[in-house]
Image 1: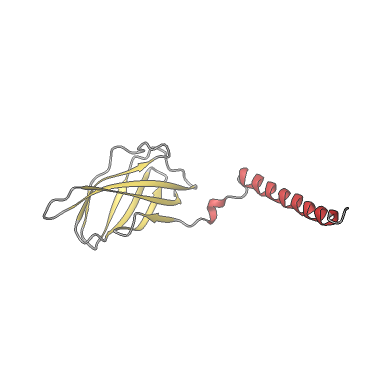
Image 2: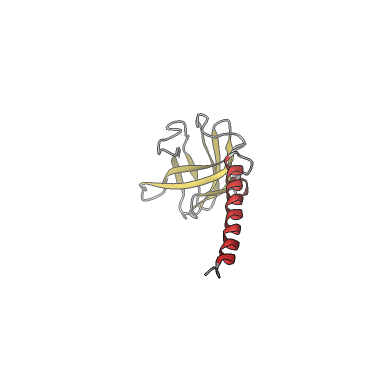
Length: 153
């Protein structure tokens, strides 16, 4: 009648040990001893046509982006905003437009983030860029949304 009792006790003992290990790791992560974001790579992704070559999150309240225009036409960036987690804009004003020639790299700065970036913390920032393709015929506005995941310096 008790042929499986030894096997069951063996499995339950290892189950409890596994559960204790999971609880310990969860507690360490909860209290900040283990920070999983430390192992996630920094990245900037706005797609292949408007390639993010370099970027910097500034704790003073600005994001500097170096973008390569791979559209094949000159573009003018008319707006660049950061969307907060709730969908609202963190910087509704303050961006100065920039033109980037086809195949060239240009810099844009998104200012006035009002303490949204926290120094020394790795965070995800959702950037929305509005641009126009210049040249004949005149182009309409296009929106591009991308993600930056980096640490503010």
